[in-house]
Image (tube, rainbow, N blue to C red):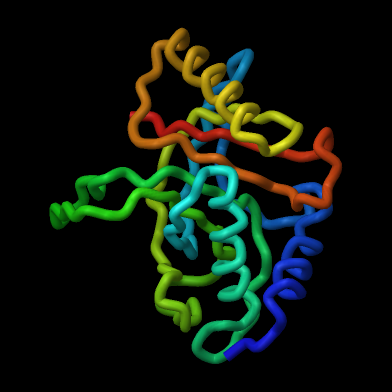
Length: 205
């Protein structure tokens, strides 16, 4: 099991994403259409490691990051290190699970799902098993999302301002969305706010 000091662990992970996103692997996607305020992307399926944390929203990212960074830095069966990728995403957890096949529904505590995208080339069978039971591995299916990109700080007020802008723009474009918004971050807290790449994703029907 990885015994690295948690503070050093997080610092090392954050230093790995201090540079701009072009140095970090991202899930593959195609831009379907560009609008004035946002673009529509089609993502291929990709794997994530995710965990649920209680929040509040402005603390959820840090809470989840610690847990997931521990996993990719070797707290897994085989103590295998996994490359850092982008973005780090978080989204609110609904009170009930979404419909799936088979159909499942279960109450969950309120909170946020925080995800790390896994590097391409892995499968669910080849990803190392997490030691921490709070870390779950799953495949995100192919999906179409409306994306608004913005720079700046990570305050809840800034996020909500841009989310409202995206929702209004998507509505004016005649597009319908489903599920909760996803906040995706591509840079570390050490990066200058004006150089940060932040995105809000709304899943399209």
